[in-house]
View 1: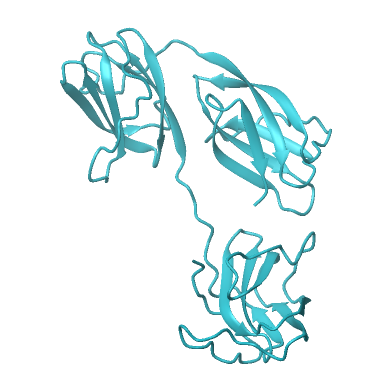
View 2 (view 1 turned 60 degrees about the horizontal axis):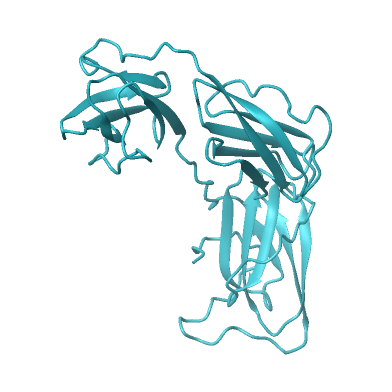
Length: 311
């Protein structure tokens, strides 16, 4: 359910009806319209208006436009007997501001000022960690958790075990510093606290690894590659496209090479995976509106197709 937020109003809206009351209605068959003004410090990228009784926001009223600070937009709702409407503004930084139960039949001028905007949620980083089993017994469970977590959580192994001399790449979403616990086939366990997973991506589980001054790292170079089919489902042509390991400061080359990727079109690429990394990020540039798209947490090892969608 969409949470209620305050909206700066240039004219005072009539209060919404009490819970359970019939929806506010005006004379039937009249054209409803009102004006929205952007008093925020940043542009509004998307604007949604829907009857309070509706279950979804419907279409973006701005379309290909943006509502810059100080600008206004006349919103035409067409013929409707409803008076109570909800509004949502999405700013260019992806934060959102909402208002509910505005009586459009009496309030014809509304202003968003950004004071109650809710920031877009930020997902924790996705880390790849490769364990090389140099212990004398198979590893049956691998548990990874944030250092401040109350428990270890679920087993990270997607297969039954890691045989002696074998390796497995696992994923963990959270802060760089985490705790690691391995359980062997005889139910004995070893664990090490405070491992920097952003620095140690290939860890050798070997005798003494929990007490060594530094986390034992596997020195075998890994230069794996994976073919991936990228599908443009954003609704707009993509002018530039970058796919790179998550957390890397370098996006690498533009995979499009100056040739736009049309909407619904696809592109086959072969990605280099240094150190066997599976978690990638994507950056798509549109050269205008919509604003550039950044997607994190793409598992290129499991997905042969990566579909980029609009917001």
